[in-house]
Image 1 (cartoon, helix red, strand yellow):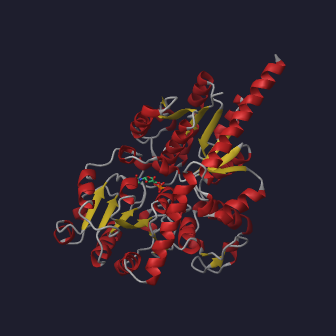
Image 2: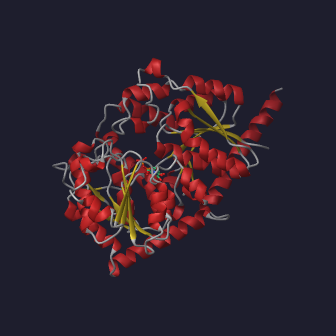
Image 3: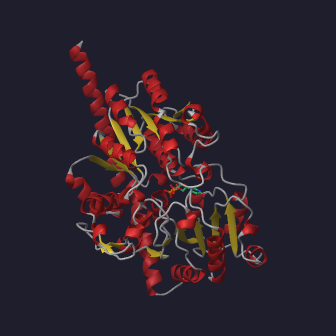
Length: 485
Ligand code: UDP
């Protein structure tokens, strides 16, 4: 019996990329996978699908629906969160993605999927699946750790009994002692203009068949076990899904065509010594003010290590680079700046890369951990400050840069000074007992990640049991339809 699954990724790279990886994992196991996205997002996915389809029993289908520009009032060309100046979900964009329900329903009626795997940002897919009589699963693009911390803080509100935004509180009722401050909490905990939207997300969670998480047991076992023991939802951890991308071409086209700097980047990497290079990237949305960019450049220059730095900035580098940086650092081969999209998996897994500065988006955390790299954590917004705690305090494979303020808008964040950056880089990339211990632990996590997705590994088995579960639901449905005839 075949399983036909509709995959519904949210329109942002950090959500689309793991959903496509997941669709490919299902397709590898013989399921028929159909990915639905809007027209302008097709080119971001198509190259990956074309490559994958060379070797599959069922071709992965990509179906496009038009983006509702005129009905929503969204400006033409703004079909992906990356087109906006900051990563906050605006009420207009949210209204637009709600309008995707009607064309999606039409496709579901035409193609009769057995199951919908939806992003959490489409609450309407819960009632639609109910109407179609099929299960709806969520792909959660975050850690078990952060789900538990958000739940504990939301329920017990420890941040309300501290005197100021900067005074630390201990997160209650969790397996480790984790301190946070109110200033590190995301808007969806401390109040947000979209709180109605978040309420709808909560309601749609309750009518969901189960949740898939891009994680693996060894990465956060206390938290996986705690959430599963509660038994209030079915959960499967099937990650790291990024490890589905093993060959060069997969890594080159994942998420976006790599920018023109890519060839230059690969030949530059080939000139460096093993484990000597630091890779710096703040995800698909992490932007900074010119002053902060200049501070990062100066910190990197002052550190003793070669680096590749991915920068998202609309203007010319001359607007923020320190005077003479180009000649002193770039021309001498000490550093490389990529403006635009970097082939992150390719870089992280290159043998010369020895450390990763990350904004702690969950995909990046998983990718850095799977590559066995120690990290410098520099969270910016959303649940990234929770992920930082997992990397630094629980797994002890990272050094916190010292960011304290969770904000989507770059001008509202606290400045991290060049001296802090230099110190963290030298600590991470240097030698000594502490640095070596951190490197060793990171290498162990990387090995565990690879074992988890191998045949017989924990995540591999979780995916098998999820597929069995879905197949038996389908068989039950067919049987009761026959009985009712
Ligand atoms: N990514 C990439 N190249 C870039 C920037 C990001 O390949 O230049 C990928 C990265 O590998 C990850 C995703 O985009 O899979 C970003 O997701 P994450 O959760 O780390 O951060 P977000 O962009 O959602 O803040």
